[in-house]
Length: 372
Image (cartoon, rainbow, N blue to C red):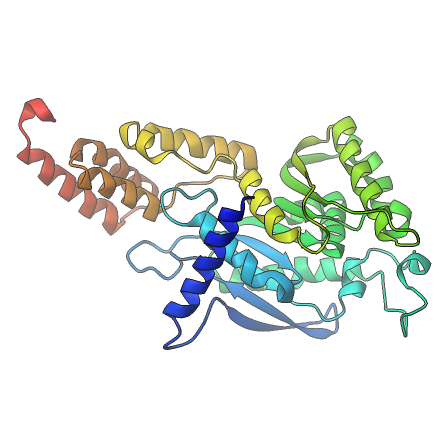
C-alpha cells in the first residue's frame, strides 16, 4: 500500500467529517445485544454502504464484514471499505460492516487456558481469564449473525477480519468452524498461543478438510527478536502456518500471504486490511473504458468473481446505471443499451433500467442509421 493511498484515505475521512460538521458526524449506528451465551450485553457498531438507503435503486442485499476489536479500527476499516467500493472503479462490493466491541478481549479471543506463564508477566497485577473462544464463537454464530441478518439486508456472504488475538480467533474459526464465514483477513495472528495449538490442528485439518471455496489472506508484520519476549514466538508460528498452507495445499482454500517488512505489530492492520480485501475480491474490478465497448466483459468478470468466492455476485444496479449513462454522456447510445438491459434482467422492475433504455433509444433514433 502506498503513501499516496494513505493520504487519499485520510483526506476522504476528513472531508466526510467536514461536510457533516453542521449537523453531526455519523458513520454508523450503535446496537446493544444481550447475550445469553456470554451472560453480558455486547456493543456492536454497524456501518451501512452508500447505496443502502438510496431510493433511486431497488433495495439490494449486501455482503457483511465482521470486524473484531471495533474500538481500535472501525473508523479506518470503514474508510477503506468506502474507498475501495466507491464508483465505477470499485475493487470490492459495497458491504455492511459489523464492528464487535470488546468486554474481555483476552477471554473471548483465546482458545484455551494454557500458556499463561508465557502470556502473563510478573508485572501484571492479576491474570486475566483465558480460553473463552468457543463461547465467543457460539455468540457470533447463534446470536450476532441471526441479529444482523434479521435487521439488515444481508446477502449471505460473510467475511471476518481479525488482528493479533483476533487473528488467532479467525484462524480457529477457519479450522474448526469453517462454514461460519466465507472469507478471512488474518492479520499477524498470535499463533504462538498454547505451544502453537492451532498449527498442530492445521497440520491434520489441512490434509483432510474440504474448505468449499473459502478465501483467506494472511499478513505478517516485521519483528526484531527480543529475549524473553513472547512476540518472538509469533513470527515462528506464522511462518509455520504459511509452510502448512504451501505443503498441505488445503482443498478448495484460496489463500494469499504477505510479509510487511516496513510494518510492525501495531501498524500492520491498515495496509493488511486494504491488501486483504483486494486479494479476496480480486476479480471485482472491470476496466471502465474497455467494458463500455464490450458490455459482456462485465458478466464475464462477475462470473470469475463468483467462481473464486463460491458465491453468486452480480454487478450493482448503481454500477450498471453509471456505465449506461457514461455511454450516453459520450454520445454512444447503442453501447448504453446492454447495460440498461442488464439492469432489467438482474433487477426486475427497476426504474433505472426502464428510464435508461428510454433515453438510449430516444438518442439512437436521432442518429442516422449509418452512425448507429
